[in-house]
Picture 1: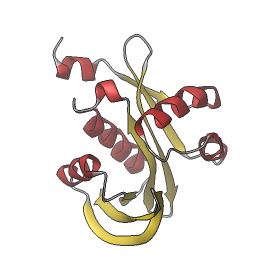
Picture 2: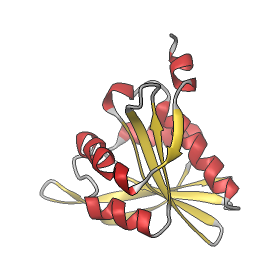
Picture 3: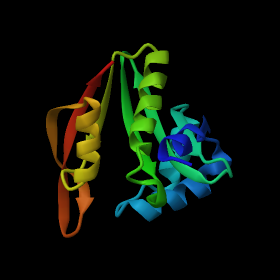
Length: 155
C-alpha cells in the first residue's frame, strides 16, 4: 500500500469524552508541554469541534480541536502520532480543519505555534498560513517562557 492509499483509508469521526484517555496519551507522547485532561474535557464540554483520525484497525493517528467565534476559527490543538509523522497526515488534518471551518461559515483560521516547532511552522507555511504576529512569553518552556508565532489562513 502506498502512502497515498494509506492516507485515503484513514477515517475521521468526532471526538467523544470516552476518547480523552487515548487522545491524552498521544498528546503526551508528542508534546513536551502537553494539554491536560481538563483542557480536553473542557473543550468537549464547551462544544468545540473536535475530530479524531483513525487507521483501518481503529488506531488513533491524529486529532484536532477548533473553536469557532464570529467569523474566525481558532485551531486550539492538533497532533499526529509519531509513527505517522512525515507522511502527509498534517496536511490531511489541515484539509479537514479548513472544511470544518468553512462548514461553520468561518472566513479564516487562527493558530499559535512555538518558534521552536520548526516542522509545524513549515507545514503551516506550505499550506498557506501567514504569520500575523507574535505573543511574547506565551508558552511554558525549559527555564522560562517561549513566544508564540500567530498565523492566519484565509478561507
